[in-house]
Structures are given as structure tokens and as C-alpha cells.
Image (cartoon, rainbow, N blue to C red):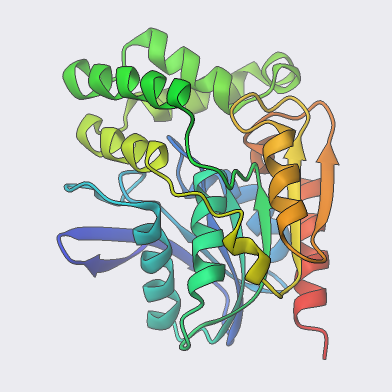
Amino acid sequence: MKTLARGAETIAYLARGTGPRALAFVHNLMCDHHVWDAVAAELSPAARCVSVDVRGHGASTAHDAYAISDVAADLSAILAAEGIEEVVVVGLSVGAHAAMELLLAEPARVRVRGAVLLAACGEAATRRETVRDAVVTKTIAAVGFPHAIVTQTAQALFGATFRARAPELVRAWEERIATLRPRFAAHALRAWSGRRPLLADLTRVAVPVTVVVGEEDERCPPADGEKVCAAIAGAELVRLGATGHTMSVERPAEVAAVIREVFARAFRE
């Protein structure tokens, strides 16, 4: 893992391969860059791959409160530090929101050529979501991750079909969740609850985008992704049946195929 200092924070990331064109991966809440392991393994022989640990997750810190736009800025800084000039960004849930922020900001030093948005939500949190997340945040900050919250989190992260088919992998992720640093995780959950609405701004996006939804995703249901897809001219929608929220873990081959197709379109000469 490499690290980059961003103010008071340390942002960790994994870089594979070389070249000016790349795929950048941003994971979902309460996970880390490992959600992309199987996907990146399929794609890295043909494309440079950079996987970031979002603030407060994995080896990245979150001593202070932050916004999802800060995650997008972290990714932009990493790409610049790696000498990457053109990128297709791949984001899952919180990562999809950061990818959309990057699409809209598009700094001149790194050109965003396309995006794959998994479990994307372009709307602000509802009052019900905000209240629910506030309760979880207070609990985490006070007592860490009790078993009940770990179990509930894993249930939100993975669909029923996957939980029944691969209980050992779900348990492995539960163990990862239990090791998250409470203060960092609380800041991460607040960032997600405080996300800004993006649907109106997404009409400005003019690069190849594919939105992927999981039919068993309860955290960011298919309707959320459908709205994001409808907001972006020319965007394509892919539905994965019997699949929950963390699609890159549940269906890595299918996710890799979608990314490969968008990468080819984005860099078609």
C-alpha cells in the first residue's frame, strides 16, 4: 500500500500496473479497497488499476469530519501523484457518489474519460435515513461495533442470495467491520448522511457512463440507480439479479465485464 498526506489525514491506496491511462476504484461504506480484489485481478493485466481506501476505512484516517467531495479530491490528488492523465473511475455506493463528484469537478490535471457507478444514489439522504444513521453513529462512537450492528451492517452490504451461498465470506467481512476505528467510522457515516443531491448537475456529464444496480440491494435500491442513469445523457443501465449492495464481491466477473466495456468505449480512438 502507498500513502498520501492530505492535510491531517493519511490516504492509503493500492496501485497496480503502469501507463498514463487507468481505472480508479472507490469502495462503499464500512468496507475497504479489498472489495475490488477480484475485479482488479481480472482487469489489471490490461489496465493500470488504483484502489483507494476511503477516509476512515482500511489504512486511511478520518480524524476530522469530511464530505464526500473530499473523497473525490483525495482520489484526484492520488491520480496526480501517480502521473495518471486519463482515468475511468469506478465507484460503489459512497464511492459512486465520489465518482460523480469527480465527474462534475473534473480537474484539468486528470481527465475523467468515463465512469461505472454501482449502487449509486444521486439524492440527499431522507429524514428517515438521517435519523437511522445518527443512531448508528452515536452507538459506534460510544461503544464501537457491537455484534448486532456488525450483523446488521453485513446484511445491508450483501444480498440474501450471497449470504446464503457464501456465509464464510460474509463472516470474513463481519470481522473486518468489527475492526473499524469507531471515530473514523462515525465520520464516514456522517459524510454519507450529509451527501449533497447531484441529479440536476449530472445532466452536464458527457462521457460514457454505465450504472449497475443489484436487484437485492436494500441500501441503495435499483430505483436510485435508475434515476442516476436517467439524469446522464446516453448512460446505460445494467441489472444484476440475485445480487445485493457490494456487487464487486458478489459478482466480480460480471462487474469486471461492465468495466472492461466502458474502458474500451472511453478510450476508443
